[in-house]
Length: 192
Ligand SMILES: [Mg+2]
Image (cartoon, rainbow, N blue to C red):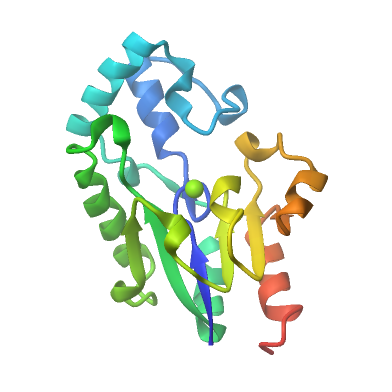
């Protein structure tokens, strides 16, 4: 079986972080308003520091995330054909000690929502680039630039700045939803 690594945030689930920022700032930002990878980049440096203190003491974003449509059912199907690893980064260099709590929240969300994933195949890391899998799905281009025979970029507002040509240079293919992932990895490949 080929090894497939799938990112968590903004690939399988989305939204909780924006809600935390809105609750803190008492704003009503929508995703379309924030074309940054880090939602808190709407704040200035001083605000951001205070927000991070509040965030790590009070917020579990995984209580408020939404599942990206069809992600869970498609991944369950993919797990029949691939060795699936959920690979998610939790180390926040701005809050090294405090970010350990994110490993717990992420792990708990994955085991609760994806019971078909072997808990030993949940990889909580700070260095995705050392993990060698045949196939990768992520919303962050930097995580897809290295090794991989099929590399799928989950379309998100923050990655639309990358042109088709730029993505092709790294053999990255943009996908718009999980149905398309299913088509590529189940129907187009040799697994069926
Ligand atoms: Mg992500």
